[in-house]
Amino acid sequence: MNTGDTAWVLVSAALVMLMTPGLAFFYGGMVRAKSVLNMLMMNFIALGVVTVLWLLYGYSIAFGNDAFAGLFGNFDSAGFAGTIAQLTGPKDHQIPVLAFAMFQLMFAVITPALISGAIADRTKFWGWVTFLVVWVSIVYFPVAHWVFAFDAADGSTLGGWLANKVKALDFAGGTAVHINAGAAGLALALVLGRRKGWPKEPMRPHNVPFVLLGASLLWFGWYGFNAGSALAANDTAAVAFTTTTVATAAAVLGWLVTEQVRDGKPTTLGAASGAVAGLVAITPACAFVSPLGGAAIGLIAGVLCALAVGLKFRFGFDDSLDVVGVHLVGGIVGTLLIGLFGTTSVNSAGADGLFYGGGLTQLGRQAIGAFSVLAYSFVVSFVLGWIIKKTIGFRVDTEAEVTGIDESEHAETAYEFGGFGGGARGTGKLTGVNAGAQTVLEGSKP
Image (cartoon, rainbow, N blue to C red; front, side, top):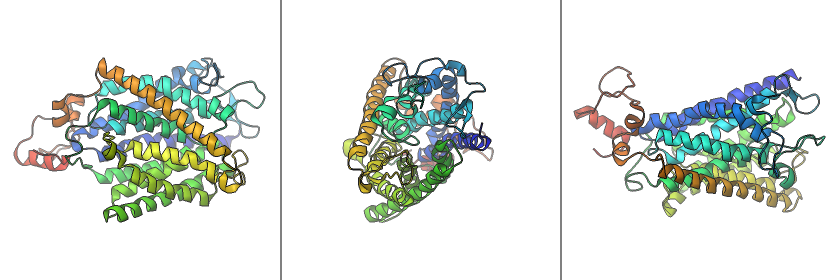
């Protein structure tokens, strides 16, 4: 066992775990005050639900020996059977299987949490939990097998079809995480329908500092997400760390310049969103492109994602927190641009893209990877969401949505307007000045 690599992977797993609470703050700040707790809970519950499922069968489906045509693994490792004291990885870089399993668990946790932003302000908590359980079981776990499970060098184990047959490159989850979540978010936004009053009524973020805090935590944790995917403290991790940094910085600038040209003002919300767009786009490419290539990917993603968030108004789907514009579009951009900016001078395990003499071959492979995951996730998510909607219900009733989803779903409110205390429990209807304060904070009419 390589103790240095093991330490790096365990630290990276902890960094990626921090991303889910960071995402909760990022999303929580963007919703109205009356639904912030519901948004936080939709993210936080993923840590509980997905962790248990990962133990029972998720890890085995994702990384077990292939059971059928590169689509999903077998159940030999269910309950982490056979993983105790076992090592994985190449010679001189072996780490405990459980360290790898815990690292990959955090990817499985944050992916469905990303979806929640598309259906903010109107979702039943237990309807969401039901979706979460089934979606990770039949979408995320198999797709992780497609993308991340590689054939063993000695042929003793077989992995997923995208990684081994198509040879699409995805270093840290552009397809399995971001395109996967973005497509599911679009499907659920269509199934649940628009929020009451959207798009005519303003639905402003209630706490922009929360948004920037969440984006900063995401940026910090993303170093574990990308550099940790090297599974070793080596030059590949250093490249991934560097490209992640420069791409994110360039994306912030790209988004803000786009806002300045289009709207006349750069915004704090735009800076935070631009950072996340850059992080999303560089994720699949971070170890396959040069630092200059990474900066180019980030800049392109910042501009395109800033423009893409307006698509929901043009096409009429209510993607509450721009999951489609940032994660789906950003994931597609980053995945495809490997076919242009990829270079084996950075990583011999990658491929040369069009700009480095590789022709269009890798771009075609990247397109197969991106759009196969998009299609599978969208179709399954739409059907699953529709079934939940028609059975146990997926959307709160109109009264709950208007008066406050936090009260109706959790019997709590995030803020106490009636006194100096910090009580979380709802204390009934607010009147007079306090009701007016809540109205202003929520950005809604009395």
